[in-house]
Image (cartoon, rainbow, N blue to C red; front, side):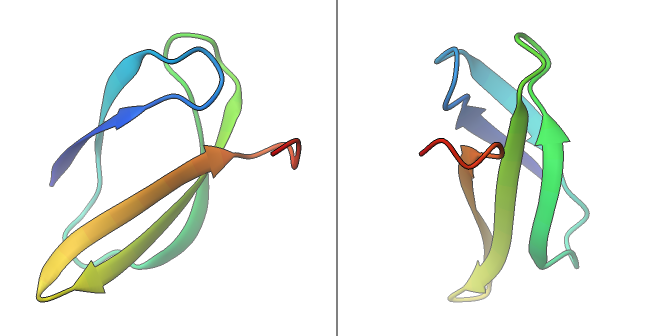
Length: 59
């Protein structure tokens, strides 16, 4: 599944692809500024939802 997210560092809109069965937390780098994201993937009402935060602990 493709999700449009906003980078918590540079503010750019970026599309990321996640397999439909993935849940949990993973680290992914921004395609624009290369800073690390902490991506939390969970199921909500049968649909995959994500939360993207700074992966360096500075939030």
